[in-house]
Amino acid sequence: MHTTELPARGAVLSSPTLRALPQHCKVCGAEFEAAPEAICGACLGPLERMYPASRRLPSRAEIAARAKSMWRYREWLPFDGTSELSQDTGFTPLVDAPRLADLLGVAQLWIKNDAVSHPSLSFKDRVVASAINAASALGLDTIACASTGNLANAVAAQAARAGLPAWIFIPDNLEQAKVLGTAKYGPPLVRVR
Image (cartoon, rainbow, N blue to C red; front, side, top):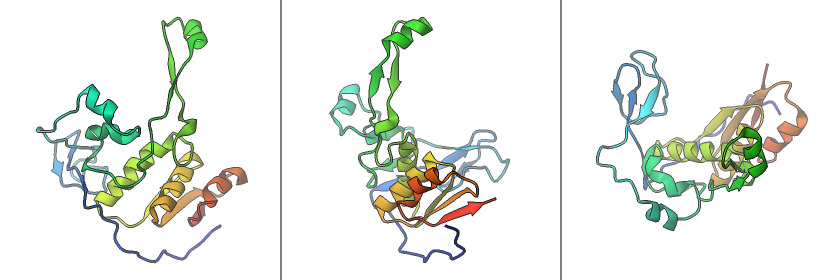
């Protein structure tokens, strides 16, 4: 599963309906255009998306009328426009846990069941759906991750769905069962010591 061959460059993925938002540094306040970067070049602080002051937030009724996926909350995601990839990701159910609530001494407790997320049945599907759409908005043509399991599966599955090349970096001693869950989607797997 180790490869040294670089992927062929495909057509640049680009979403005409999605725009990545500009960023600002949480530490020094420097502002930057949208880019696939997370660290401030001026002070090494973390970058955050800048939401437009004119952004209109939807009402509860508007949200409820939308499709049952994470995209019903699109105004809080790091881009403007309509996502085109992984439309069914998110909106995993909340399950009432009354016995656990009693044990913890709280009136009511709900637990998120992420074992039904799409496409890889992992809580990582939501973050990868957001990332793959951000990659689209930025015109990137390949996605990658370093992971020991759930993230690798989600990246490989989302990339396969979108028809994108993906590179997955895994520990060289990762259990075979975890490797198989990612390998079934066909990305190059690079074992790293």
